[in-house]
Structures are given as structure tokens and as C-alpha cells.
Image 1 (cartoon, one colour):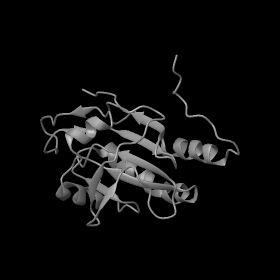
Image 2 (cartoon, helix red, strand yellow):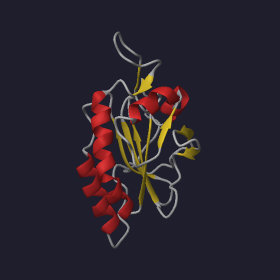
Image 3 (tube, one colour):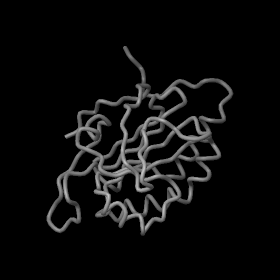
Image 4 (cartoon, one colour):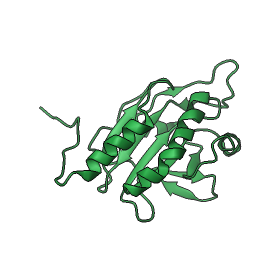
Amino acid sequence: MSTLVLQPGQSFPNITVNTLEGSSFNLAKPTGEYDWKMVIVYRGKHCPLCTRYLNELNQAVPEFNKLGVDVVAVSADSEELARLHMTEVNPNFPVGYDLSIEQMQQLGLFISEPRLGMDAQRPFAEPGLFIINEEGNVRILDISNVPFARPSISSMLMGVNYLRGLTEKFPINGTYAS
């Protein structure tokens, strides 16, 4: 069950995960010359829809980078499963692993248990997508409880391109408070 803690406009939590590249990164902080960050949470190796989604993402990473957006992906898979999975993706973006249940809850993700016949070793996060702006706040957020209900990569690219091209600061959607 999700606690739905994270809201648009809030600070993205400081969550550090290990990467397949042998280092670690903070999900909230863009690297290099980028000032925005996109964090894709995927279910894991057991999910063929995730593999397809990550392959689509792989194709779009250069376009996101041109817009100043750092791109990372993370799952609850062990290092071994994540490494094996990425042989099917050959990502041109950093991939984190071992996302803990506590970290999933901090992000407000839905969490599922492995089911019979599923190549998952432990509870895993359902899909999540977060775009964090230069102030460290959640600009765009999408959380799903199933692998087939998530935003298309091309729609995300179009939306980020629109937001990054605005000449005046556009308020973050979904932040109305009565």
C-alpha cells in the first residue's frame, strides 16, 4: 500500500542508491551540467514491459540531456538481477539497484509482493516517474500500481521541452491549496 507522501512542488527526498557502474548517486541531485533530473522507478527484471520502457527511454536520453535533464533508473532488484536485466537494455544512463521498502515508501510508490512464477526475489516497487527541477522540487510526478499505466516517453519529452522553453516561470501543476 502506498502512503502517497510525495506531492508536486515538494522537495524530492535525498535517497542514495548504488549503481551498476560501481558508485552511488543521490536520486534528487542532477549530475554534470544538468539542472533537472528524471528518475524512473521500474519494477525489475521480471517485467517485460519495463524492459520495453527502458529501451524507449534509452533512445530518448540524448534529447532529455539536450534539455538539461539528467536521467536515471532504479529498481528494488539485487545487483545481480539488475546487471542481468541491463544486458537487454544496454542503457546510456545510470541504473541503481536495491531500492529499499523504506525508500519506496518515501517516494509514495505502490509496492507489490512477488507472485508464483515471477522472477522477483522480494517486494518490488510498481512504476514511478519523477522530474525534479533546479530547486530540487518535484515538477512532474506519475505513480502507477501496474506496469501498463505509465506516461509515454515521447509525451514526457514533449512536456519537458515545453516547460523548459517557457520564458516565464510556470507554476507547478497540482499544487492548489484551499
